[in-house]
Length: 434
Picture 1 (tube, rainbow, N blue to C red):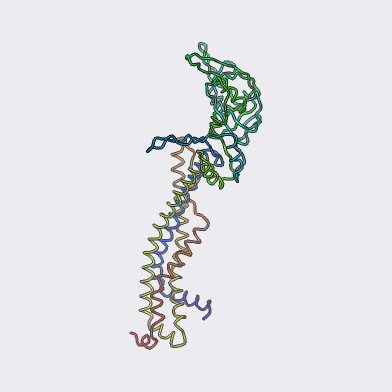
Picture 2: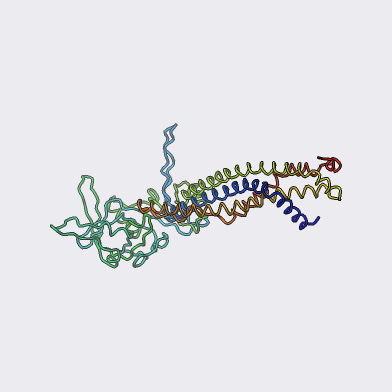
């Protein structure tokens, strides 16, 4: 018996009992649709979370801090302190996949800029690179090349400028970021002496560039060169800074790709430092949604299991009704393998037809849920001010194919026991069966 003859015979047998086959296939349709819809829902939630979390910062960036060493809770002995030195920078730079290692230091006093009659700004940061594009930021105006005597500010810094001594009826609005470009401003540095008195130091700097909004620390930072910051902190402390003893407060490490971030972070921790990347958080959330997809798929698979019992029952009844037919098939030369192939083909056919209907139904329901959910969530986003979600239900390309194959296999396995019973029937007893 050829494959085409087998398929023709299977189709003919299935169409002889359309009502029974249709009712049996409904169970497979429901189970397959549940698998497609629920897994698509989990995948949509994962994609939406990833797109929302992608805005929390540059996912290729790793923040590194010294490890101050917590004391042993049992003995009380102090832990080992690991400071960040120039050798640390060289060691991390040598790690595979690292594209940049940038030291940064914050001003240890109070610093603000004064322009016209406005004062304020953001946090003052010394950065160990002459090109801020190494931080993964982009220029909104001007340049990202940092030189001595210049400053590059974040896009949110001008919004923090205010008039500390307003005149009656006067209202000065903060300038736009572009208005500060190439302007000479006063950088006012403040320190407090041991007796509590305040000492101020004013230097002139030129705003060389404005960083485009990054939704991260650069938005409200004012960057100057690291040697200048070291000089200002020396002025605050009243003594030179020994990097071998106190080190740097932190580093920014850039990875070549997101795939390398977790591995690089683990290697930095193994060197004895504290390290964190937003990618660690994003990966944890993605792992949660992957487990959620598996749970959703398992719920749908339970419905398919129930449908499998229905297929087994249908095939068992078909064998009882067609016992004489089986005897005739064997009498004219059909082997046990031929009979087994026919009945397995019928059960697999029920699974295939049900799976095909379930895939179409699940995909269609997913589109309906997608439209309704996005419309509802868009309204919620307007009320809360949060960005609207991009997707609610997303069907991956592999899922319909997997669901169809899985439903067919379920049908095949469900019909295995009845088909074996049919294949091993004695032709003589089958022909005498009433």
